[in-house]
Image (cartoon, rainbow, N blue to C red; front, top):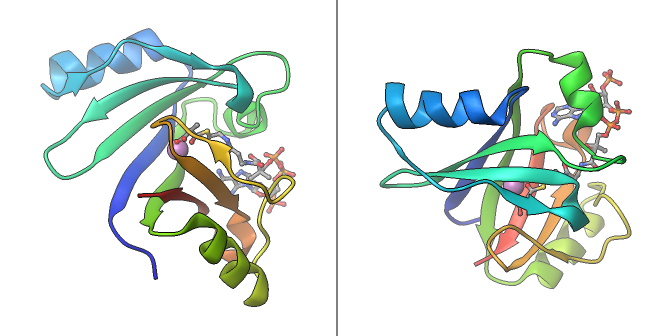
Length: 134
Ligand SMILES: C[C@H](C(=O)O)C(=O)SCCNC(=O)CCNC(=O)[C@H](O)C(C)(C)COP(=O)(O)OP(=O)(O)OC[C@H]1O[C@@H](n2cnc3c(N)ncnc32)[C@H](O)[C@@H]1OP(=O)(O)O
Ligand SMILES: [Co+2]
């Protein structure tokens, strides 16, 4: 049911330094930082030929990634995002399979202006999974 890998997200302690690393050292195309208040993150997109990398830093008081950065002060891989054709059908399938859909279970509009949902890392091999409607 899942399709393409949409992105891999990396939480970083210093977004400016991480952006410079991807742009100058690795030679990738990077975006300007974007504050996504409803998600509690600031994002820089790294565009690769076959996928994207999301560099994430906490935004605001109640960021869902604050605890992760505390536990991983140098940063680390935070989630992977798979595309699905129908986010509500995917959500219902996940629930029926016993996987925990995070939050109130209603899709939010994600970084690419498309509906997204998150699945509990403990239900997916210790990896936080994001589903994005393609
Ligand atoms: C907008 C944009 C987009 O692309 O569209 C985004 O991606 S926004 C991306 C930011 N948004 C989100 O991440 C939303 C969904 N995330 C969440 O609701 C939360 O981050 C969460 C429930 C996964 C974890 O919250 P938390 O860190 O406060 O919770 P806890 O500290 O209690 O964590 C519970 C257990 O899960 C582990 N854990 C926490 N976060 C992760 C992670 N990213 N990957 C793997 N394991 C993780 C903890 O170590 C702990 O394990 P142990 O008990 O063994 O120590
Ligand atoms: Co994401």
